[in-house]
Length: 101
Length: 101
Length: 101
Length: 101
Image (cartoon, rainbow over all chains, first blue to last red; front, side, top):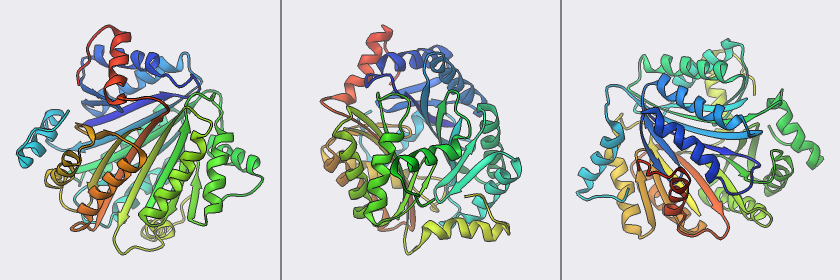
């Protein structure tokens, strides 16, 4: 299961990088397969692994924040593995060229 | 915690209402506080109540579907209750008028 | 074309209702068909009508805000009219019951 | 302005890579600054550049498709340039380590 998520604290000022660093430290140390992009993080794992990780990130932020917005988008497809690499690779093969990642 | 979610099966044709009926039956019978809108369903509950419900909907669809896309947006705010009614009511008070719901 | 959107200013504190009132006043006075829900607003219109409206809301907030997050979800389906009412009605007919809206 | 978007055709079967190749060809040839990830594409440009590009992708798919779902998430921040590189770099500096991209 591929999942992209992002967490935005509301009301801490317009610079969020301190808060994003807390979240990305948790993701990076979790051992899950992930790719960070400028608008969120994509992870590949089971429902339980993924939701446990997102809850851990949320709990860490809610220790200090009053309000957060979480966006989660799931692409759940039977019998697909290594989708985190394969999805873009499949499009690149059809295009016959390498895309910017 | 307020959560809006939607589940879209990919590859079953462009009419989705049979599949949405399965999802909305589960939500309606769960006893959770919900409001359906033309693009998704908003529920109010704890993290566990909300994620258990979404997983139940997902599991029901994945019995027959090959691939689904799930969108989840969470507005998590400390010490707010009945946000499902109060959020719009608060805006209406500021505007001094009733909005279309 | 059905579109749900929400606009969240970052860094103004955890109460957003003053800012949401600005956005909803613009939507309500625009004449577009809309339904507000606790997590966003659904509108029905052409691409141009919809994007012009969202841009107007964004421009109004950016007069005073430093940073905003906008979420837009579009359900674009050929030859469907009054989808803002019909989508839920179609699911209700299949379920044989009225849902909470 | 940073924008992530994804377009999913409904009802064409569970393999979408042919359709995604059409979209990514348009993005790649547009000259806009972009980064593709397993769940969408992030672009950096003005409101007009970004929305013109998304509309071009949508129009191309709607030539053959009956129904598509488009997700758009915008991070609009005054006086920030090269956010597509800088946002992750800023988090990496705080963490003192390189993240998987």
